[in-house]
Image 1 (cartoon, one colour):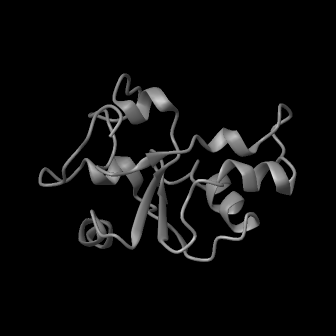
Image 2 (image 1 turned 120 degrees about the vertical axis):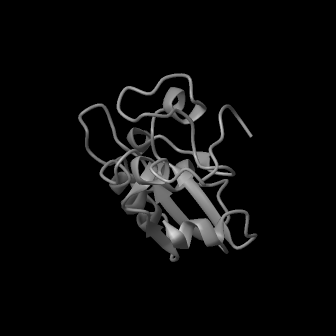
Image 3 (image 1 turned 60 degrees about the horizontal axis):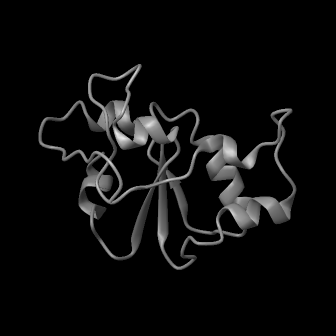
Amino acid sequence: MTEVQAKLGQPGTLLLDSREAPRYLGEVEPIDKAAGHIPDAINKFWKDVLDEQGRFKDESAITENYARLPRDKEIIVYCGSGVTSTPNILGLSEAGFKNVKLYAGSWSDWISYEENPMAIGEE
């Protein structure tokens, strides 16, 4: 959490939220005590790299999914509790991204600290 705090708003870091859009936007929160996302995070739903059978899509589809992400930044991936970030982390690796990290505590951890900022809606 302290590493994410320190890198918040830094030009060399991109935060990627893996949850469904309504949770990211703060429209609904079925699990945690607060809705929204970490400021400046972008949303890439974890299921977007999977096909209808729950298997990973082919390499070209995965690469296309992340085509608009910068390759020169550190990407810190998070979700609700660190579990559903995994498909994005694996997908980013498959697409050739080299500097990808997991914020294991994710949203559940982030909101447990009163001083941490939260954002709602699109940024």
